[in-house]
Length: 317
Image (cartoon, rainbow, N blue to C red; front, side, top):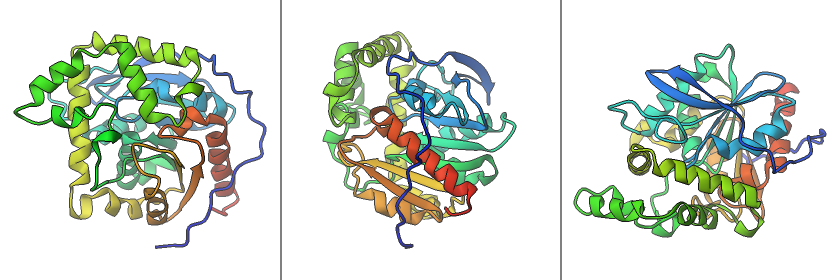
């Protein structure tokens, strides 16, 4: 493996962080047979595309997109089965199928993009960047869901989720999970994904509750979560050339890897190996930060991203 070079932080002036910013307006676009919902952050510069994690949505990127809008135009995608994107019949929710959807969307844009992915979205973004380097200008991975052969149930928002995908006990477990209220689901998410849930603004908590209420009315949301969970676990067991660890060396785009020191979902111990496996990878570990650094530390993440873009422009990345 190569020597690990730390990621630089830009000193450019950023917009004031406004956590009262509501989710960016959304629009539906026909992508590979789907009506995909995309939240658009009007900005200056080339396109940046944001891909959320398991159980997340396009709203996970609200604050980071605002921090970067002076430099890029933002497009945050709801993957099929999440947010407001209803999956088409037969969609299998595997990582490669999610990646195909992202590729098909990127093909509608006029130029290569700055691609961002968090958690499962990070794994999907690795597949996209490895398979279609022509579509990706730079890559930013926030706690990417790289394979973990020692999974622990306490790393799930509800440990029963692992049982929900099993053939015999799964239906009963899924019925039990469906009984959780929007408030309970939001509390589980906060406790698992944030280093200090007490610092999350009240308006962001209310947004999450409303989003969970909306998901409860979607007949397809539960299945999408369960099958995407299974697809992610299945990807961790994929051997040989299709393993995510084997794909990382194929990513040619300059790549910034960001990890929260207090990530309870995907251990920060995987950060150095992930960054070193990437030909042009660098790592930034953030203290007092959990699994969603783009939500907890949007200004710092923005400075790291701009630092990468500046270094790329100087040919020093």
